[in-house]
Length: 140
Image 1: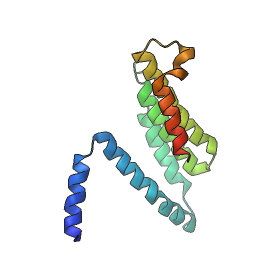
Image 2 (image 1 turned 60 degrees about the vertical axis):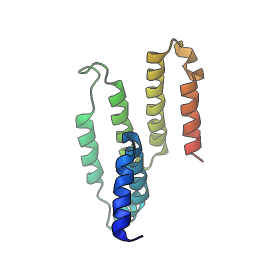
Image 3 (image 1 turned 120 degrees about the vertical axis):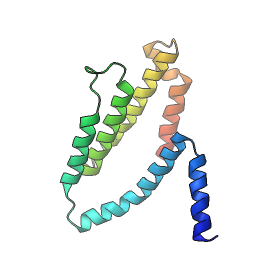
Image 4 (image 1 turned 90 degrees about the horizontal axis):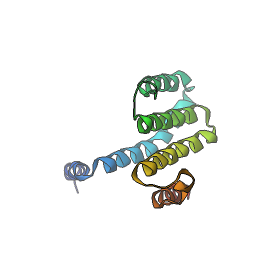
């Protein structure tokens, strides 16, 4: 396959992906590329201010529950990104755990919206069990 054939094929395949699969595709690439950035940053006396600038930018667009109704999903996404950026900066593994709790909280909110499960039963909902299993599989 020539480069041009590959280029046409990858463009078509990407366009055929669902929005969420396009995001997953992009995140997988970023994840693969990140380690090159880490090597670069160590070799060139990593400037922590770059991460701080990103953190400030994300914090600016993070919704405040006092200002917006029904923003808890957006808030969780923003907080997860903030925790990930903080992890890149300080390498504290509890930040990765926090990212996972943002997902768990979001799933819990969604379960409460779509079902009549009592708060103490949400952990037994099939969606929560699936989410927990998915998180566990990510660690393998």
